[in-house]
Image 1 (tube, rainbow, N blue to C red):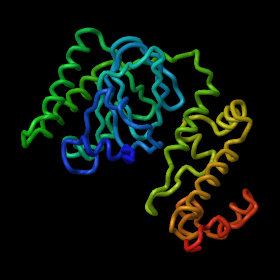
Image 2: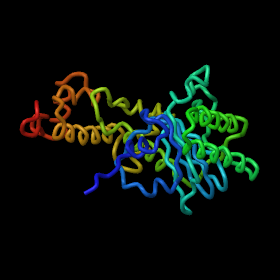
Image 3: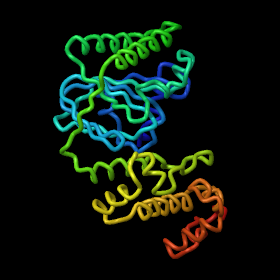
Image 4: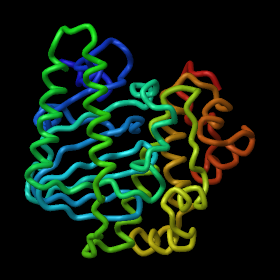
Length: 296
């Protein structure tokens, strides 16, 4: 049986160079041909050229767009895109900040596009949509070429698109039909999901408390707790604990890391605290989940 292509392999196999994912240009149809994939955190910027009706949930906001638009996503803010009337993304490209680092005097995160509270969607009229389509087509041509300096040409197109957006006014209208509690819950779940799976010891669970999540969402911790209780019947700390127990159990059963390493990767600096946490929520010590031959 053919091994399913991972999201990392999908991007790297289609990348324009051999470096770990720094840039890629794709069409929506490419994603439709992929096998279902486990969720992975996004550590790249994404620019989508959209059409039709789109509902965009970005941070703690929801925006509705009809027609041609650019959506520019930062790796710092969670987002989801709903397309209620069918596929609404023509093309998109992704890149890591390092890909453009030498082209900006400052960190790319300091651009107004990625400032805290910035709206990510820019509606396009017919003339603007044509201009953006031409830039995407130019990137696509270079993407397929053997020209030694094609990265420079592609970077120029990316910079043109970013500057094009910065000259425009972003969409500021909210999609008021989305229930606030449901929206906040969805973004909370995505923030939680983004931290897993823990795949190496240099990766660590970072958002550990309700206050951490509330800060990322830009809401008061009490508002977050109310929203989650309304939609799930559970508290913020309870949902965090449930997910930690699930991930801890997986690592204890299937990884070769010792208990202290697993605890540290999940945010427990004291192994005794981790052991107490697991026993409190499962009724048994971490060693009880270890497979035969796996170090305790």
